[in-house]
Length: 120
Ligand SMILES: Nc1ncnc2c1ncn2[C@@H]1O[C@H](COP(=O)(O)OP(=O)(O)O)[C@@H](O)[C@H]1O
Ligand SMILES: [Mg+2]
Image 1 (tube, rainbow, N blue to C red):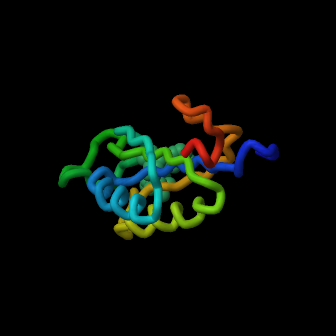
Image 2: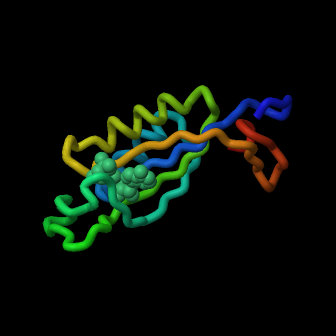
């Protein structure tokens, strides 16, 4: 966003393995992240879920349980947040997930009317 209402913010969407959620959350709060959304999802990547093990059992179907994180941060924190998630989520096995970074048009804290980086 290119106006005087506040610095730009980024939207980070990450899929991680469910058992990594707590480790990733701790790493992110240590890195200064103050809020996030967490969802239980199912998904697949290039292996179509076929060879991934979840809780000891191979899934017969293509969808594998994952956690989706959605995090909005100030522009200048985005790179560090991505590397923090990647470091904490990595197991070196297939299905470690993906991280996407998007531009955000605007952010608003409803209670105060604060905008963009001040809304976080
Ligand atoms: N192209 C994609 N678009 C949206 N979500 C994806 C995509 N690829 C992977 N995901 C999500 O990330 C999760 C983990 O993907 P992963 O198996 O690590 O990817 P890959 O097998 O392509 O290396 C998937 O279960 C899915 O939820
Ligand atoms: Mg995969």
